[in-house]
Each structure stands twice: as C-alpha cells, then as structure tokens.
Image (cartoon, rainbow, N blue to C red; front, side, top):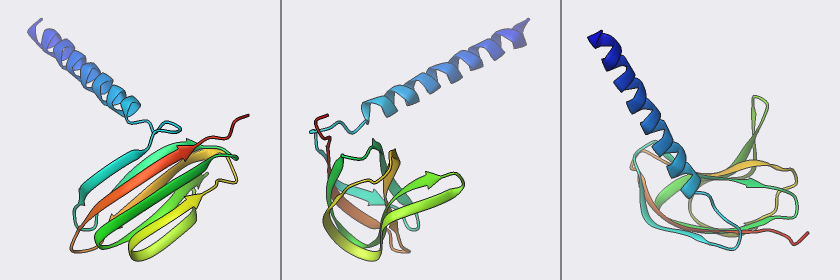
Length: 131
C-alpha cells in the first residue's frame, strides 16, 4: 500500500511541475506591439539562447542586439526534418534589422556563444498587420 501512495505523490509532483512549466511558457509569449527587452543575458560557453514566436506573412519583426563577445545569430524555422535559416550571421557582436516572414511558421531567434561565452542585450518587437 505504501509504495502506491508514494507513486501517486510523485505523479502529482510531476503534474504540478509540468503545469508550472506550461504556465511559465505561456507568460513568455511575445505579443504584438509589446517589445521584449532583455539586458545582460548570460550565455555559457557553447550554449545558446532562443526566443521563439509564431509569425505569419504580413508580420514584421523588428529586432536588435549587442553582444559583449561574438555570437552566432540566426532566425530559423523547421520544415520537416530540415532547419531553414532566412537570417544567419557568424561571429557577430550586433545587429539591428527587420525580418518579414514569407511563410507562416514558428520562428526562433537564436544566439550561440563561442568558447568564452557571451552576454547579450536585445529588443524584439512583433508587429502584426491589420487584416
């Protein structure tokens, strides 16, 4: 009897943890017209940081970033097993641009640090066309 209660308790703990993760993701959604501004985001050596959002044709994404050390930056989406990168820059310390998607997909802005790691500041603003 006792192991069954422990198993149920563990299952409840897992369900609670999953609910917290899902709610944290939901609160991180980038909303149109509301800029996401992040300062001093540390990226450990050879690790990456991503901001992902759904974009559709007619949207435009205004972004800018600076990095204290060079990073590889891209905007990408998945097409089946392939990763498509409409924007890709290696070893850059800044960018300030507008991205307009040609297809509706979940896109990710990705910064990957090199062997020394990096600290980045960035601003992302999603603009949605009035339809």
